[in-house]
Image (cartoon, rainbow, N blue to C red; front, side):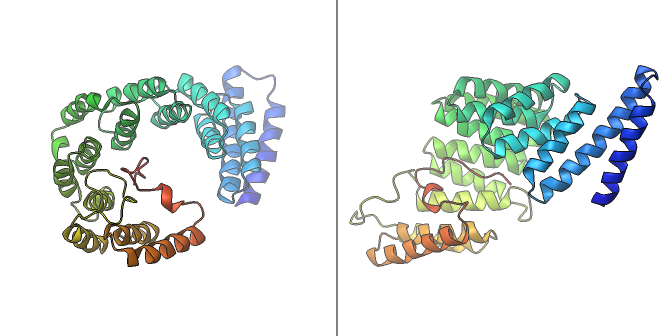
Length: 308
């Protein structure tokens, strides 16, 4: 397939050389075709993890058609993946000039502002997106996390109301229940958080089901968002909570998250003999997946939550 794309690129360049004197609309149409071929070559190399080659072809696509939105978005994602925030920000802004409603570009811009600790700018981008599409629960999830960091959780209910008004069945949407559960958890209302997560876990094969179950486990293990690594001699009976968490763990299918939560169950038991078992599990997780630092994932309320 890649050989066909390379031949198509050569052929299209020949076509472009032959039509230099033609009308502008004909030239634009053929340049757009060339941009599409370069984009597909970029996608191929991106899938092969040859990111530099992918970026070369995405940039070539933009030379052919500077408004090629797919190439701009792909470049922005690669820049973000590489931690090159300025490059990502440039591509997102360029894309939003072409397509002001592009949700992915808006969310990436908000993410960049968040990483730069520019919370007000990040909040602005999320507000722009959520006012246009209030039932984008992936964005709303990140927005709640951002408002927590900015000390503005009191702004959340307004956006929940917008989501509820977006369509007739929004009030019972699992995504909205999940987001509300996060909000109550961050407000230290574990009972309300659990109620929302329980409502959001159905249907069991739904998009938000596993994330709700994982959040329920985290609440049971750490209901007050306290330091789970605290005093092992503290006389707090958490036996029932740990048992409930272990029961819920059976429904978790993500192997890494399951192993991580099993380790937290051992810690939450407050039994010193379980500490060594937990540390062994953490070591195994870190060895098997170095991209998922175990100790930074859960304590004190899950600073960053992965959206399905």
